[in-house]
Length: 196
Ligand SMILES: Cc1cc2nc3c(=O)[nH]c(=O)nc-3n(C[C@H](O)[C@H](O)[C@H](O)COP(=O)(O)O)c2cc1C
Image (tube, rainbow, N blue to C red):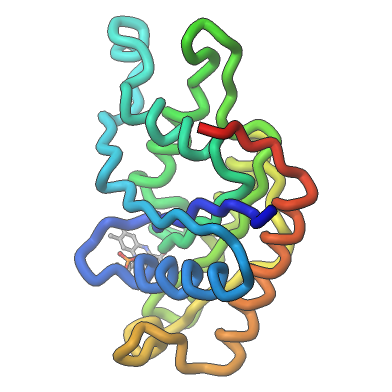
């Protein structure tokens, strides 16, 4: 049974480097035999987390849509920029809302529980957005997600991709392949997906 991996970026900016990284990850995962779903967080707009809003209106339907999609996969590959060496608000907000789901259709439901994640970062700078991934790891760990150790960080991202969206540097290709292979292995081993 092929591992099902959900791929998304932590930015919805037009031409986002993290989107390009997510596209490269999607290709690599598929080449390695995974069944891949590539989404944009832009298709799951959410208000800024506000506990008054949550109390009055509950968790928004888009958080449930995202949560159900996560639950229907074995693992996630998240490609993110760093903002001030940390997690961009778009991504943190989405994770925060999904983390508030407790039930679906009257049944206990925690979308993140038992899931595996692989992380990639990108930046036009030399740090490659890697510092933000340590914060992302901590947040996901708190949400009961297992995060694989290898990660792939793309520095000087404006020059890192060719016209076909392929990573140019051999070491980047290698590190992306390692992330994808490790994620597929762990996700297959720990599969808790809910067939939707
Ligand atoms: C609020 C803010 C903070 C940022 N902080 C960092 C940073 O700490 N490190 C970094 O490499 N780039 C930083 N950047 C630049 C982003 O890496 C850059 O805008 C990048 O293109 C965003 O990712 P994307 O291409 O995936 O949209 C920051 C950008 C913004 C808007």
